[in-house]
Amino acid sequence: MLNKMQIGIALLLGLGGLANGVFMAVAPEAWYWAVPGVPDRGPFNQHFVRDIGFIYMLIGMAFTYGAIYAKHRLVLWMLPTAWLVCHAVFHVWEVVVGICGPESLIEDFGGVTFPALLSLALLYGSYRDRARD
Image 1 (tube, one colour):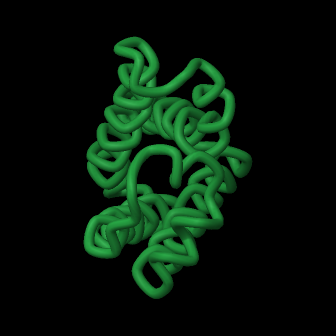
Image 2: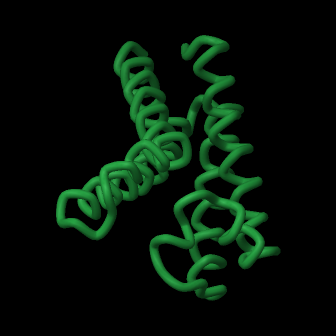
């Protein structure tokens, strides 16, 4: 059984993902200008921002539902974790190939890399829990 801190982290990821996704879908241009580093990566595209907003809403729902219902936790957290990790790797790749400077890794850490690392830890904990059952 995951401990209360892990469930709290899952709820934080879930509710944060939902909030971010709703912000992106409802006010894409405001979101674009509010998030540091986003305008540096290309021109505003409301369709693209809303598309990604829907992904964040789904991620948020999966982490929230998984925090509440242990039976489905591993499956619910697997795909959002995969997306968050791929997203973080893509940001590192942008630096490696010279699209962005290394400072973007620091700028992106809180919103891109850290959620990916947290989700990996949660997924591992959920897997370990399931293996014990």
